[in-house]
Image 1 (cartoon, rainbow, N blue to C red):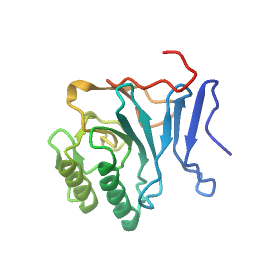
Image 2 (tube, rainbow, N blue to C red; image 1 turned 45 degrees about the vertical axis):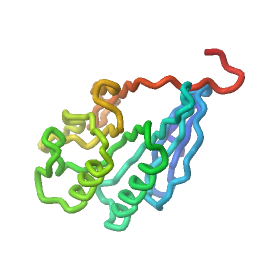
Image 3 (cartoon, helix red, strand yellow; image 1 turned 90 degrees about the vertical axis):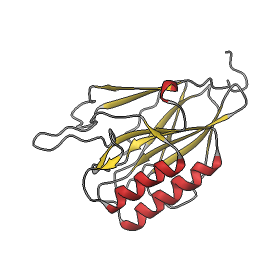
Amino acid sequence: RSASCRCRGITHITTSKTEKRTGIVVYVRDDIEATPIASVAEFEECIWLSLKLKDGDKLTFGCIYRSTNSTVQNNKQLITTLKEIGKINRSRLLIVGDFNFPGIDWQTEQLAIPDEEAGRFLELTKDQGWSQHVKEATRYRMGQKSNVLDLVLTRQEESDVKVCLEAPLGKSDHVVVSVHMAAEVAPTVGTRT
């Protein structure tokens, strides 16, 4: 059973795994040239796209879900995937998703609690020179500490990216994270600008 909805003028790309009832869905307007990028590692839940921009450049876009039950092997594959993706496009990059690293304090960019996997991830973001734009908690559950689990990573300066946290959808314990990034996409052939 697919949880995605279909909208006129929008294409959806999914990693849906029916046996696990998990997956990611990314919606892209039909007038945007988006080419899937094959993942370089076997990380379980990710979608990578190359979006053609008006200036001839490309934006590498990634959407990731890292389960709280992610295995050590899957965590290694996440780091490998992110390192490889970092090499693909040296200028424009936007990575979003639920990374489930509650042990990272993104205000200080330090580990708040000892966590080897979170430490590797934090080190990678610093080594790559990426900015993480979400500074306020994105997950709230009664009786638990709120955390920044949903991240927005870029190579861009803070002024080029605006993040807005909005009310959760339905009964979700995660807020909606809206990202606004200065980038003009090139229209696909046959569309008006």
